[in-house]
Length: 168
View (cartoon, helix red, strand yellow):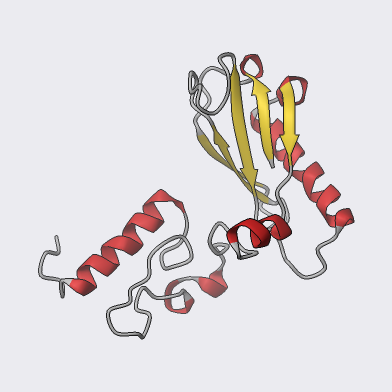
């Protein structure tokens, strides 16, 4: 979900990136990643306003309008835990969904894989593609999403290409 908000509803000490976890899993609104535009970033919003992007993993099977509405409600609830005045400052709201990503990005999945026991360590996708001189890095490659995870996956590629010649 994408929001344009009046800046007055954002606490002044808010970090730009936050995760809200309920402890009930990592999909369907139980784990929401929040990305807030920087104060004064007039490329994303006019002065006095901020943008907020909220994302969660979803199960693609059985996606429909009812699930979309339930998920929108869950995301709003999660946002309220960190921005209690959030709803009074909403100026504009857009919802993204798997079909939009499929249409505009050509894939239905985005944001890497959920961090679960089933897809970590030896079960995660390797940076080694199996094709000569084709390496993989990013949020769907071990060790996973986030700036640090993506950077580390690139470091693994670097080490493999250089045959550990420049390792720390």
